[in-house]
Image (cartoon, rainbow over all chains, first blue to last red; front, side, top):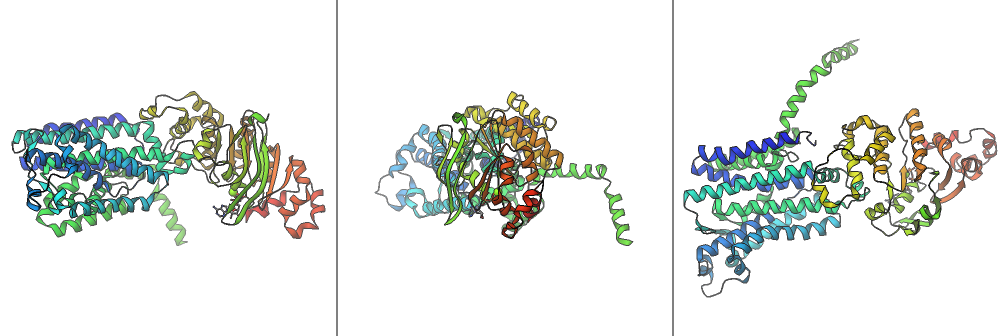
Length: 364
Length: 267
Ligand SMILES: Nc1ncnc2c1ncn2[C@@H]1O[C@H](COP(=O)(O)OP(=O)(O)OP(=O)(O)O)[C@@H](O)[C@H]1O
Ligand SMILES: [Mg+2]
């Protein structure tokens, strides 16, 4: 489980960083680089899900909520930056005379926005996690509760058109902290920021996984009661993992906005939250790279197959999901180890001999 | 002596009206291997659950001057109470070293959790030596033998520096040699700590107990040395069934009166 070779993983992150930061910008078209940026955002959220679910055993079905916090904080800032001194266009459409909603005001400040992207998910996940984990809410109850929260937030945003843009969402951002978003050089910069943040998140969980905290988290996942009898409060252990995963979802959401150019409730609701989980499960929830690569693969499938053959894509994803859950509960990243084990086994055990002996017994 | 003794007085535990433990009192001191025995459902595990905060109880359970009842589980642990469970529960996916390292961790500042482990702490090395697990440092706990898992649990209590070890059926499923090794281990540990063992195995009890409390239907039936308890007709009656009342006198004349007990327990 816990890999005995942390330095190998670290060099893996190094290779991944070179691929994302140096190779991809050279070989990909602008269109695909932009897509890759989008997958990076989902991957950032997925890395957090891997931490909370894969290592911590908390099935976080509502990461869309935290993705939304980052995304909407960023989107509100970019909308205000684009509108300048005037009221954002979509608000004028619904009620030309009303002022800017109160809660928008602070998002004029770039500093406040960045702080909000970090602090909002930490506060919300902190409060929510504290309330749930101290009451020992876990398993399916925890999953359903977080999922319900994502549904509630998506509904709230849909129903407040003038305040949040409703189902149409927030879009048409012209500037990103002073940079013109249309400029290809600036687009590259935004991509590089997202890719770099993904690498930073991977490094963060790499350190967490090899730390004592990582071991304690796995212990808590597997035998919470036992951990309590060693003098720890498992609620605190889970809380830390949950808050970090929420923060990562928020960062992913924040970068999603300048890259994709639009954020709507559909990107953060129940379906989107489940899709994030699906990527993590495919890749391998407890491994270091599995969640990120799985999320990127699902993202890629969605923009290639999903756009040319949308009905088929849903079925393929569903089928893939079932196959992986049934035959590879630790995700695709466990395939190499499986192969290695399968190749070693025949050599170690004289399995055929036993089979022959058994056959003969049956015959006699 | 009372400074570091475990004193349980008039312990009551109810599960929605059903009295599982009804007024149990006993004490345990360092230097003795204390046994708690009784037939299935007597309330032995529930007594441990109450002392460790897992079951809500009234009465009193004191370690020295401190009252344990009413505190949350992890706070009771921090006062020095450690326990094992009837079914061995180690962290299967973690190695022996990782298991022990987590057990040793409650004395560390939280921030140090963020660093990786370097080397093996001395307390862990001692516990490994003591429990004979030194060769299994890097073995995942999940593939240890049944007996080794139980020892790992005891080793975890040692590195945790528990003042009190509450062991729920520590030799269940062990071979005869493993039982002997465990009994000797417990005797060594008991020199400096309080050791309270819940057991069904009468033979093990006879060989290693210093003092025994017999529970029956949530009440203390008998208390004293192994010889005292074995000679108590009420104990024989409980272990041999009510029909055995007439045979009780005959049984007490038999050199090993509790031998029939184990059969009565297997069901
Ligand atoms: N959580 C619970 N809810 C309801 N009843 C319980 C609970 N735990 C234990 N009991 C009951 O309390 C009584 C005492 O159980 P306990 O587990 O303490 O027995 P024990 O002496 O440890 O028995 P064994 O030797 O089988 O382990 C039993 O009748 C049991 O059914
Ligand atoms: Mg029991």
